[in-house]
Image 1 (spheres, rainbow, N blue to C red):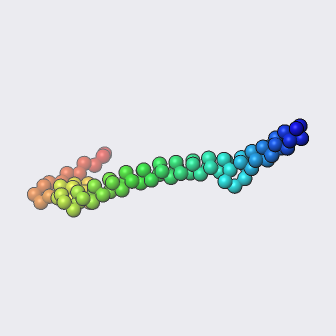
Image 2 (cartoon, rainbow, N blue to C red; image 1 turned 90 degrees about the horizontal axis):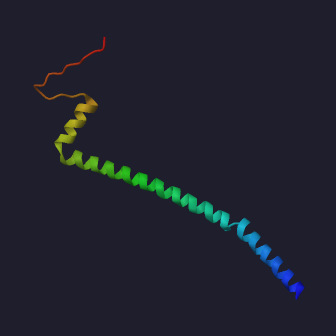
Image 3 (cartoon, helix red, strand yellow; image 1 turned 30 degrees about the horizontal axis):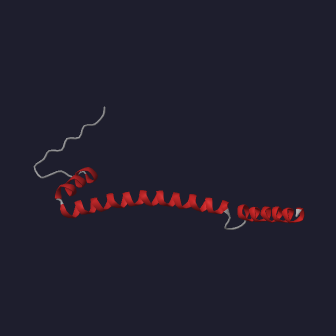
Length: 90
């Protein structure tokens, strides 16, 4: 009986060692879960950025106001009949 208990305890230790240390063990499962969580967070960020870019594209295609705003801010353009004043720091 004692030999059987010792044998089962040894077998349990071997199985626990394999569960914790070898490929496909719990340590690797935890690493993979962490990698999946990080990737999901990155995907959410990229999804938000894509939605913002999509909204910009739709605004540029549909509305002239967005196009005019961009031309004014990025290219420094003005409307016909407007006067442009530039104030220089002394």
